[in-house]
Length: 506
Image (cartoon, rainbow, N blue to C red):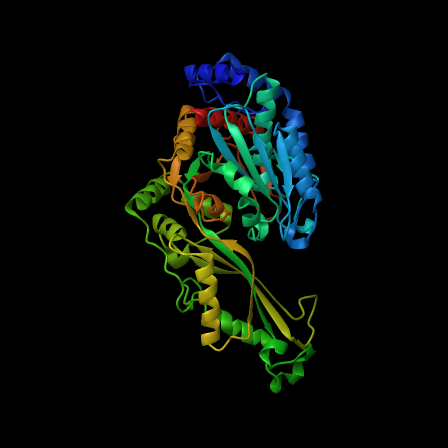
């Protein structure tokens, strides 16, 4: 029989085996007993700690930024190499009309198969905003946490993904096989709304492989700074777009930037855009007022109970401090603010660009203005319906000339808590001595709809111990060596993936 079955049997005989943080971490073990096989894997995790960190550093040094057309096709080729090195036997780069994806399979001869979703792209960055160069992936000491790695993509998502790959390396180094077969789908456009993810997942060979899985998960760092672990049952959908007002399209205002003194007799595309934006939301900017906009489904009673429990265990003061926020919308109390977070769609202005934005003044009347917009969607809403309503609304309100350029987006996702994928997460965490919170959906977004929607209709989620923060901002970090007993470093995160794979196998 395969070594896999020997490992599985003894894992089940030792359900209290420990997650161990990195060799330099002081995070306490969270299982009471151990098995010889898990001890062997754990020893390999510790032995290869430096190699794991170096693999992550090298990956961060190889950025792929879709918005800037930077790092392609090298990013996909590097992702494919990482998959091959981790033991995936079949690895192929999948070309799309945008950036390439990667499709890979690992056949361990196991009875069950699990899907993986990776993103190898990262957000843009301004090095001037960082305390260390964002592609150097330096290790620095962070008060209250330990040694962290600072770099673009550190926690979103290369750190957790590198920890998962390290789990596969450790299992193999210990003489074992993965307890489940794996199907990997990786894309390089998540940070621009995954406009071509369907061209990867909808390929017949990818669909056939995914159809055999019990579900798909994305490696994540689930531990908040207070150690609380949250199991998300879905994510909001998103639409990313630009609204463009120009004198050329409008037929009013200048066709090029002109002297601002002429505003007395020439219309302004900038003001035209501002007035259009003002029609999209209420006076306080917090309620969507787009005519015919799709209506969200109300929270269920079970979702309200989840939010109530989570609101009692999560610290409002800590959340405000971490976000730099003094008040919630409408001065809502903590639980009601969380209910709003989970239940409400949003229209957010990411940025406004029009005319001169350099040092000092430049008295011009600009001919073009752009608003970068993201629209978050909740169950009951679809990307297509939201975009259609926006276009109809603008035309009806006298702004039909404003261009609506959609760059990406997708529908929200939902997964039932009783699915094997989620139940295995809960069981793994409880065996680790962790009482996880259930949460209706992540307020952020990822393209899980390609897995949860037709025709696959799979369970989908996120999993992984470990901690990080700063996604999309400066000084993004991932915890490598923890000095905080509530948090796991990269080795502890790696072992959490080992444990999860064995739980999924059962």
